[in-house]
Length: 439
Image 1 (cartoon, rainbow, N blue to C red):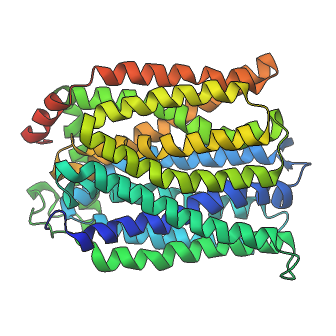
Image 2: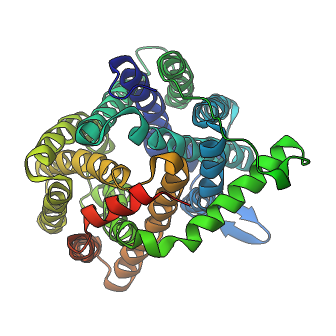
Image 3: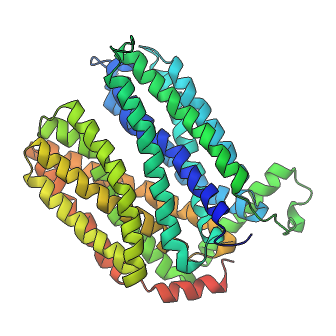
């Protein structure tokens, strides 16, 4: 496959455009509110003699989806590397995920378990599909253009996801003029996100290609049924990679640093709306407009920091974003008004795009190309594992102190630890290990 081909890169970027509608409109904005207000209701739901709130059930199912992806990502990645099936896996997860997103339309008040099941399936497909999407990055672009292409992919995602969210938000806000109930408007917005994901994936199918595998099955697997043989190869390759982790110590150090600072980033993203609602008493409209602004501004953040990485190198540019993230949580501690919250959203948008795009490309520059999907499976593991501790720290501090202000500023610890660990990552030694191969 030819690297830096414009059509190939366009097809790759369009998958981010496609699936970002799901995560922005469904997973972050509309479905959590619809689940809490309509599906479960403020009284909660009785399970096994215990009443569970919508928030508790939502947190559980999000964590369960992340845990399943945590277990399967490296093995699926290894299978796709061996069989050159990254594109096939992406297509399968994209259309399965979009189907279950569309099925959420048929969930009504009281359909708690059906809603959780459909959302769980869509969420697992979204996470798993992105493993293979990320794994294409080292294969479609040369190392000198990786930062820019990674940033471009995120920019497409922010545009596509933001545009679909804006349409859905307009539908919900203007539901009365359209003769719809607010509940129906939200359900239609969710269906639109599923159709958006499915429809724009066609661009990826048309323009993103993959070089066929020429590697034969090892002798010991040739008598096995084909699916089991591939699973065996996937597990075997994953175990071999673990045996050679000493060779990739700087790559592992990066993953630990990433786990630290990404924990802070994900906590800011996941808790910002609750912080604005409960601590600052902002209106839902203000919160949704700020979320939309973050999507728009992150487009430019991803591209600006990609340019900066070309001037000062990728690792240093990521370190700059972590310093800015530290400033974000300090500022969040002091804000009081809607205008200040919106300004916080602008700052988050700028550093969010940069930190996410450059982390992906920095990692991509250090992984063996022949095992990119497997190594991005590890990247997913650390990404999802990192989403556990920040919210837990946030919740404990909020419970003990009675204020979320101390919770938000405590996140600076994650950014500082990530910054320090990233400082000791030697990219050149990591790339020397990459040349030696994965196995």
